[in-house]
Length: 191
Image (cartoon, rainbow, N blue to C red):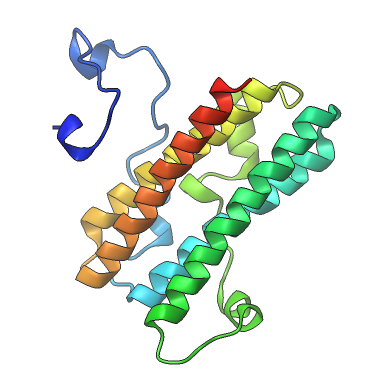
């Protein structure tokens, strides 16, 4: 089923999911669900998604300031830039379906920052993953964990959203999270 959905590296784990020993999405099944009530219009979905990207961007900027190694600082800056690009695609999508063009400044004033991608706070991510903020591989692993959490959240939200157009937007954002994960995987391979 996963291979049919485009996943390339699918493994059949002997013993099923209970035998899986690697990292998985963490937290209760309703983690982050409070960010969405299921009745959002498409424009509201985009505002929440933008705020989650902003939360992650702010996190990377904060971590860049705290890191002591230049390569790690540069990596956090690169990760922050990726979030800016994703925010821009969300902003463009907003204007594509809105009845009036909204400037980026106007849009950002409408967006209420609620949480980091995936539904956890910065502190919770750092405590859960015990990341060494001076090791490039650990930083990329943390970023991958956050993107995986975000993908998981968007997939769960998609099941609860009533508006078909809103669901399509969430699924598009989820696919972008998959692309982020693939990019981070390539970045990890380059180390």
